Length: 366
Ligand SMILES: Nc1nc2c(ncn2[C@@H]2O[C@H](COP(=O)(O)OP(=O)(O)OP(=O)(O)O)[C@@H](O)[C@H]2O)c(=O)[nH]1
Image (cartoon, rainbow, N blue to C red; front, side, top):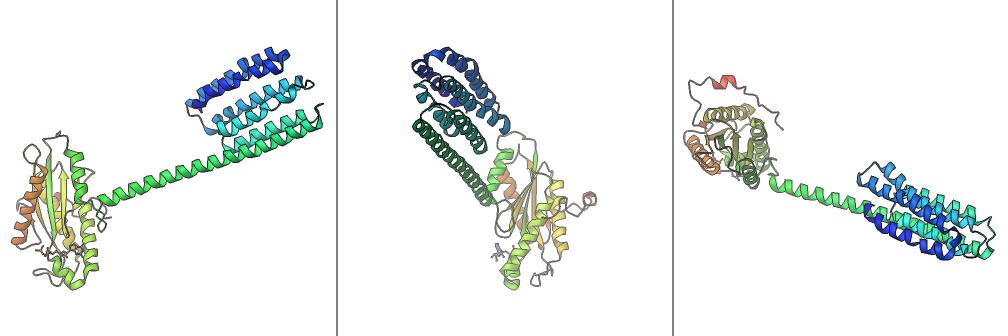
């Protein structure tokens, strides 16, 4: 609205020429109405609109401008009603109506109320006047047609603006959904490897926090091919979802990351975790999954689904994240070689730490 204030002011005050030419006797009165009433009101409206006030305040103020303009026109018209030139002057009200409904684009309800008020005042002054019948008929037809056409335009513009807002919103939601889908593994809901790079970059990318120790856990479901072969692929999917749920439950805060790294392989990155913390969390995860007691009759040594976990931790001053991941991967293969369903390196025998860690997940399994 503020962008239309200056052009509106210029055009409106340009009409003083019309006053001067058509109705010179009331020219000074017109100047007063223009400069002392309508111009300040228009400036005030633009000023208030910049502060984004509530709709009611904004639209009421905006509607007051065309109402004031029309009042000025009709007032001068009614004073000069007996003069032939006044018959031309009355049509300025039509321009004001178009200004309100199309240029100012008042909210439709305000546009309707303003237009009806303008039309009523106009007819109320026009009908009892001494103007010729033909002139009254033309005036009446013109105001009704202008009212209908400009309100119709206002309604369509408002509807189009709403539609385009909804379309933009829909596009944004679709984009966000697509982004989420691109970053998430659809089966488990965990982040995928692409997202891993982005998250690592976001967390550690700027090189700050070199002292922070990061724990890496590589988790692999044992004998999963045999599980799939025996129970079928859908059961395998369900099993992976439960394992992923247990993994997600180990995360302690938003800086811990869980990623589906490959088919039945998962990576956990623990922010600010020593090797002892990392191994304890790995052991807790292993026990949680074992406690699920998901039957796996073809597992070589155990009768339930189990996982093997490779653990590594180190400060970012010494290791890159990729080196921690590679070391955790190497540790995973040690765990597999040593008989599966275990953590490598193992929890130290004298460690009291597991006793201080509850085996139940820190977060509810989603
Ligand atoms: N159901 C299901 N199976 C998957 C998915 N992704 C990978 N797999 C299966 O996971 C199995 C992995 O098998 P392997 O790499 O041979 O490993 P393994 O049988 O678990 O043996 P170890 O890791 O040595 O204990 C393959 O049979 C894959 O088809 C998946 O999304 N859903």
